[in-house]
Image (tube, rainbow, N blue to C red; front, top):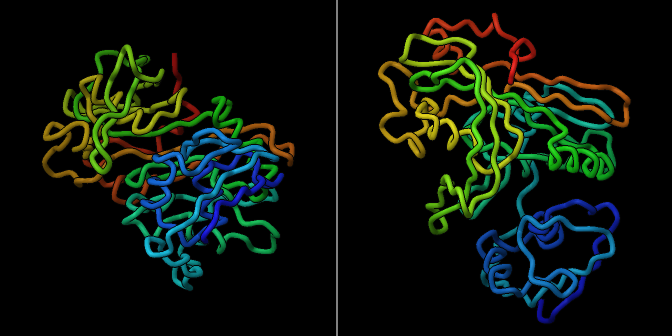
Length: 323
């Protein structure tokens, strides 16, 4: 493409992140090149500099600069038969509004410069008989397992996207932590900010310059002071929020070397992040139903729960109280 273009945002793209809009319309542009175009201000929205996570509205005009085809990557291939079977096997719930899947740990939700297999690339396999491709409305870290909600239409995506952004959706996570908090319940309110260069970024507590981050926790069970099973309910959705908050509490999530370092590991337990998106409760769907959606603990995490004498079957997240 050898000239600047101005593309108008269509109605069905309202609420979509700019980076995702760009990849839909220009699938040959690699992640790194897109980030550079945004960083240098060559991509603009209504004449203003734009950020990757900026949400678009119908009628806005996106400035698309000339693209150097030498630094683009080829469009993603269609979903392979094995990935089609895999992603469909992870469905927990499906109706006219949403599809809910049980995301395994180790699989990214979206791609990057070195990530080619991810949930976003498999969404065509979940179209079924619908006209539209399912849309992501929230994220889970690569190493976190559990409930992931997809909207089946642009209209539902707008409603759910707003609900997630305004914290009208209740999310409950289960975690095993090293040590035990001093109380059975508590609230962690520590602002967070991103530090470091690309590829080595970390979220850190930042009282003065950080963004507000709030997590409530409840101790479901404990093995003395060695480990505890926590139910975590975030009221905000900062990157790595639960991991940073648990580490700041002095009880890093088991297996979280990034934020807990050596203190996050215990002998005889799998070296993976012990964080699971257990439940999402939502209201106001077009179907008129209020849904509570739960993902079972993966087998590997269940082994760790049993290692400490915890029985996941005795505590549904709905039975856990918060302050």
